[in-house]
Length: 268
Image (cartoon, rainbow, N blue to C red):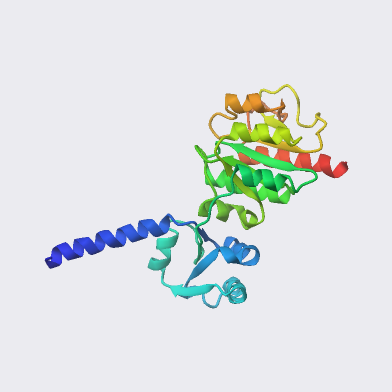
């Protein structure tokens, strides 16, 4: 092989390696990595930290946690860390996570069977990682028991989602199910009422008396709840608007709804 062909092959190999690495289930950002090290260190393979960050206080905290968890630290330059979080606001730290099977419908049912009273957030076709991350963070703050999403036509638990969730992704049980309608039917068999949020619903969120266990369902950014998912809801509620605005961002609506549910649950 002549030198020119060898150089082309080397560049293609390097590009392939970068693409493969960037597709791994990594976690980046100081808060997100700290949370994984505190709550689920067994999921980490290694951590990459910029050489220039050695003396920073937050990095020292990460080093201490990594030492206790026996997680390998590699000090790298900017070009290297960009392979693991291309174009992301990684704050100079990236953790490489082990590949693992996602928690599915059966795992969700097993989780629910351990609860006396359930509060679930179900997201139908949410595709923006910032929205999902914000929803997970609000769900953790409101004391919800799980977040459920479909596997298709929806964002999963990506590195960007973990970053926006600011550590909540490591605390909140997260389930991706193949058939969301089937999962909602299974929830009802477990005496969990399914409440859909829809702007055209006649009943206000603030006027409904919530049952003992609930799953609140919100639709995606573009079209809201799909017709099939609407039919699986026990009833629909809306958030009253003070102006002519038709709807809220899905993460904002989820936060409003979950904290109203929390308020009612705390009262009873």
